Image (cartoon, rainbow, N blue to C red; front, side, top):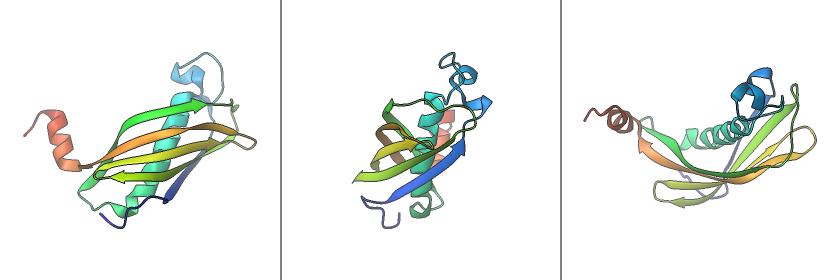
Length: 129
């Protein structure tokens, strides 16, 4: 694990399409950016931040998400998430996450990930030891 420290940040961006609306993801019945899609974008930002700091055997898994979805973004809107690493406690990593569209802050919260050995994690998940 490289020089992983508080203060680092990562980003992810995309567009709102028919496939990531609340209607399509069945998290609501309106054609706007879905909360689960916003959370996924926030996680993607955290994963992007971590990629250069993990060795090839390591990965991270999300273990906690606590966010508020503050504003709706229509289909065609651009969205962006920023994850800032706030705390490193051994293998547990805590991030402040924010999401934006062209006009507003659309989401904010906290996200935690754990560093795991990829192969061991997969074997445990599949019940193969």
